[in-house]
Length: 343
Image 1 (cartoon, rainbow, N blue to C red):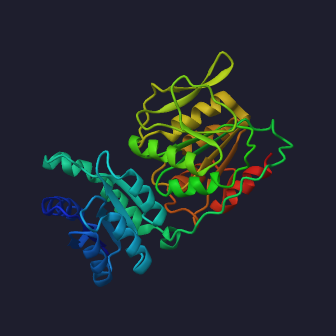
Image 2 (cartoon, rainbow, N blue to C red):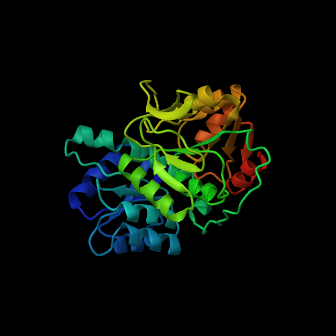
C-alpha cells in the first residue's frame, strides 16, 4: 500500500513532535519531513515532493500564508491549514482563495489522548486531500455578473438552500457571484466550518457581493434577496410561524460530526416549502445533506449536485447521487445559469 507522503510545517518543536507522532500512528500516512517556518517549508516541498502539506498559519517571519502562496505558485500540492483559536481568520480565507485545500482548528490540549482525538479530523482531511484534483486548487478569479434577470416564473420556487463542506467557500462564492441582483427569493448556506470562521465568511461575502449577507439568527424572518449563512454553534432549521418562515435551533440529533448540519436545514425546508424549494449539494467530505436533498426531491422540489470533475472532494455530491436524491448533476460554473433557467 502506497502511503501518503506528508510534510509538516510548524514553528513549535513540541507541536512538530506531537503532531508527527499522531500522523505516524495511521498506517496510510508517512511523515517525510518537517519545517519550522514557511520559507523552510517551501524549500522542503521542492526537495521532498510530498503528496500533502500540513502547515500552521501563525508563525514568525514566514507564516502559513507565505507558504501557501509560494508553494501553490512554484510546486503546487494540496495544503491543509492549522488555525489557532481566535486568530488569523482573514489570513485563512486568503490562503483558501490562493489554493489551500482546507483548514482545521489547531489542537490545544496537551493530554495525549485528547490531542490524538482532536487530530482525527486532520488524518481524514489528509486522506481526502490526497484524492483531490490538484488543478481545482489552482484558483482562478471567479467571474462576477449580477445583471438583472427577468423572472418569468418567479412564483415557481420560493427558496434556495446550498450545502457545502471542503472546497465550499470557493464554490459558494462562484455561485453567489453569478446570481442576479434582483433575486426574488432568500438563499441559505450551510457551510461546514468552525463558528468563528462562519462569522468571517459572512462578513467577507457581504463585502464582496451586492446582496445583504448575514448570519442567520434565531427567530429571524426570512427575507427575499438576502443570503443567510447558518451559524456553527448548533443545528438550525426553518420553521413556519404565523405563516412566516423563521429560523430556529433544532432539538433533533444528527449523526454528522460537522455543524451546521446540512440534513437538518434541507429536511426542514422540504417540510415548510415543499415543491417550491431548490436544494444544491456542493463539494465536501462525507454524506451530510444527501438525506435532506432526497426529502426535497420527494416533496417535489428541484435538487442539484455538483459534478465530480469540478468538486474538490466528491463526497457529499456522490452520496446524494448514489441515494437517488439528485435531479441534475451540474458542473460548478454552470450551476448559476442552470438555476436562473428554472425561473
